[in-house]
Amino acid sequence: MSDLWVANSQRDTVAAMAATDTSDATGSTTPTKRERWMHQWKELYSEVITTGLCTGCSGCVISCPHNVIGYDHGQGGFKPFHLEEELGPDNCVRGERGCTSCTRACPRFRTWEEEAETRLFGRTREAGDPAGIYRDIILTRASDDFVHEHGQDGGLVSAILIWALENDYIDAALTSYVGEGDGSQWTASPGAAFNKDDVIRGAGSRYTYSANPLAFDEAIEAGARKIALVGMSCQSSIVPVMKSRKIGKVGNRFALNIGLLCSKSFDEAIFEELFELKYGLDRRDIKKTNIKGVFQIWTHDGGYHEINLKECHAWTRDGCNHCPDFAAQHADISTGGIGKFDDWTLTIVRTDLGSEIIDKMLEDGSLIGRPGDDDPGAIALMQKLAAKSRSRWPEFAWEKPALLPAPAKK
Ligand SMILES: Cc1cc2nc3c(=O)[nH]c(=O)nc-3n(C[C@H](O)[C@H](O)[C@H](O)COP(=O)(O)OP(=O)(O)OC[C@H]3O[C@@H](n4cnc5c(N)ncnc54)[C@H](O)[C@@H]3O)c2cc1C
Ligand code: SF4
Ligand code: SF4
Image (cartoon, rainbow, N blue to C red):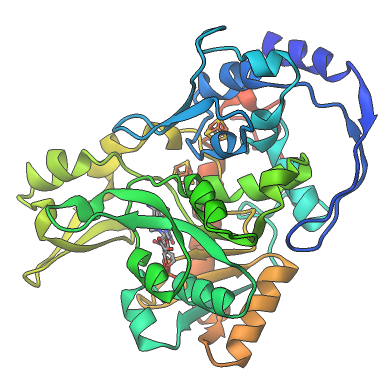
C-alpha cells in the first residue's frame, strides 16, 4: 500500500457522523449512517488530478458551492484547476474550512466504483461483469425517421431525450453541441437542451471531448429542476457518486443518466495533424465520423474513408489513458454503436428507471426494439472492450479504490 493511501486511511478514521437521509429527483433514498467525509480539493489535487486519474469529467467544477474551481477547455487541457490564489493551485481556503463538495462529486476519488454500484444496484459487481451490472441488453432505434437520421447509430439517445422532455421526466438535458461551418462542427461543447429542436441540434457523435455536466448552470438558470445527463462513461459515474456522497444540491437535480460507451476520445489536433496532413481530409469537408474497429469518415462529396485506429492512438486525449470504464457502467441506460447493425443502438438497460423508460417507449411506439441476441457478437465485443479498459486502471490505484473485483495482476 502506498504512503499516500496510508495517510488517507488514517485521516478517514477521524470521526463518524450520522448523515440525514434525503430523497432525490428520482424519489429514491440512501442509507443514513456513514463515515465523516473530510476530503477537500487538496486531496483531489494530489490523488486524482496530478496522478492522471482525472478524466476531466467536470463533476468537481459543477459541485463547488463557492465557484473556485475553473475548467481548462483548451486543447490538451480538459482539466479542473483552482481559481483562488491564497493557498496556491494545490490547496483551498474553503476546503481548509471544511468544504468537501469537490471530492464528494469526483467519480475517480477513492472507492468511487463501489459507492456508485451500491447506490444504484444495492450491490457491487460479480467477477464476470467487466461491463458492469445490467438488467437487459437490446437493440433499439428511434421510430421517428427524422430523429433516426440525425442520430449517430439508432438515434436512441435523442429519442429518449425528446420523449423524457415531453413526458415530464425531465425539464432539460445536459448534452453536447457543435459550432457551425468552417470546420467548427467538430468542436464539441457542452450545452443544455430544452426541446426537440435543441436535442436534434446536438444529435450524432463527435469524438473529441465535451464536458457536458458544465451545462448544469445553464439548465438551472433556465428553471430546470429535473435534469438528464448525456455523458461519456467517465461522466455518467458522477451522478450516483454525488448521490451516494450526499452532495444533494447538485446531485438531486439529476433525474436521468444516459451513458455513451467509450474507449477513448481524441485531441482535436487529430483533424489537422492526421486527417488533413496525411489523408488530405479537410475538417470542413467532413460530414460524419464513426468508430467501428476503424475510424470511419464520410465527406460531403459522398466520399468514405477508413483510418486504422492504431494510427489515431497518438492523439488519444490524456484524460482517457487510465480510464477503466468502457460501458458507461453507472448510467440508467448505456448506449453504443458496436455490432453488425449500423443503424441500431446497442442499449444496455441498467436501472429500474432505465427499464421503465425503455418499456414505455417501446409500448407507445416511440422506439423500435429487437433482442440483443440478434447480435451476440456485439455483446461479446462489449465485454471484451470493457475488460480491456479495466486493465488501464493503474496499479498505484488498485488497493484503494479497488476496482471490483480487482483486476488480476500480471
Ligand atoms: C467520444 C465518444 C466515443 C465513443 N466511443 C464509442 C465506442 O468506442 N463504442 C461504441 O459502441 N460507442 C461509442 N460511442 C457512442 C456512440 O457514438 C453513440 O453516441 C451511441 O451509440 C448513441 O447513439 P445514438 O444514435 O443513440 O445517439 P444520438 O441520438 O446520436 O445522440 C448522441 C448524444 O451524444 C451527445 N454527444 C455527441 N458527441 C459527444 C461528445 N463528444 N461528448 C459528449 N456527448 C456527446 C450528443 O449531444 C447527443 O445527445 C462514443 C461516443 C462518443 C461521443
Ligand atoms: S475526474 Fe472529474 S470530478 Fe474528479 S477531479 Fe477530474 S474533473 Fe474533477
Ligand atoms: S475513455 Fe471515454 S469515458 Fe474514459 S475518460 Fe476518455 S472520454 Fe471519458
